[in-house]
Length: 232
Ligand code: SAH
Image 1: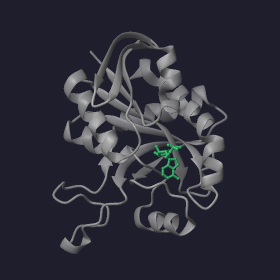
Image 2: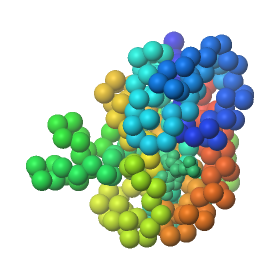
Image 3: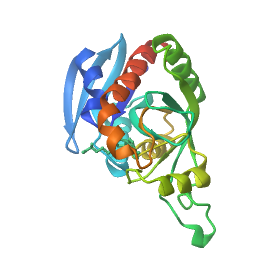
C-alpha cells in the first residue's frame, strides 16, 4: 500500500496540511514530530524537518526506516533562478543537486558528491508530471515549471552569488533542503519529487521579498501537494 512522506523544512510549509489531516499516531524522533494518518483519503506521514541539508537528510532517512514510506514529497518555498519564474510561481523538480559541494581538485564536476556516480539525483518522472498537471487543475492562475532544483546551506540573497549558481548548474530555483532529501531518497530507492513555490528572486531584493511572500508561497505548494495525493 502506498504511504507518502511529506516534508516541509518550516512549520509554515506544513501547518495547513497538518491541520487538514486525520492524525492516527504522533512519533517523536531526532527532535522532529512525525504525524501519521490520512490526508485527502491517502496514507501520509507529515513532518517539519527543520532548515538546511542535514536536518532534511536525517528526516528523509527516518521516513524510510521507521515509517516505510513508498514516496517522498518535499513541499516549500525557494528563490527563483530564472527571470521568467516569478514570486508565487511553482517549480517541480526534474532533478536536484548540491550547489555547495566542490571536490573539483580530484576531478569531480562542481556539485558532485565523490563516488556517488551521479551529479544530480533524478526525481520520479511520474510524480513530476503529476505535480505539474495537478498545478494546472488546482492553481490555474499559477505558472508551473519543470526543472532542476539546487540546494545548499546558504540563503542566496546576493546577485553575484546567484549568477554564479545559475551559470554553474542551470537550476530553476535555489533552496536549502531539496537535494539532500533527493540524495536520501536515491540511496533508499524511494521515488521523490520536490515542489517549491517562489518566495523571492534569490538576489539583493530577497531579504525584503522573502518575509512578505513566504506564507502565500508555502500555501500554493501545500495546496498542490494535497490535491495530487489520491492520484499517486
Ligand atoms: N525565516 C527563517 C529562515 C528561512 S531560511 C528564520 O528566520 O528562521 C529560508 C528557507 O526558505 C529555507 O528553508 C530554504 O529552503 C527556502 N528558501 C527560500 N528562498 C531561498 C533563497 N533565496 N536561498 C536559499 N533558500 C531559500
